[in-house]
Length: 68
Image 1 (tube, rainbow, N blue to C red):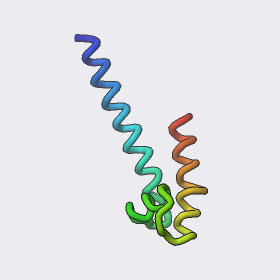
Image 2: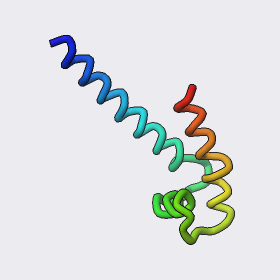
Image 3: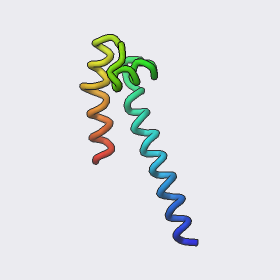
Image 4: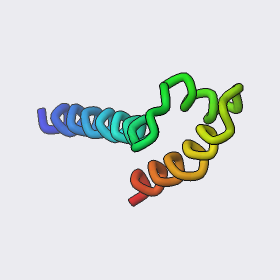
């Protein structure tokens, strides 16, 4: 019984970490759509300023938040 509770909590906290990581990428003072964030992460066709915001500000901030 205790092992199943630990597994459930592990899954819940892992899912919350992933959701918060994604929220950190998508939310900010500049409104950037899901498609633009995805395109800037995968090297797709996106405006240079949006790519700069995602790759130079939001992504490093999200990675450091997860690592902390």
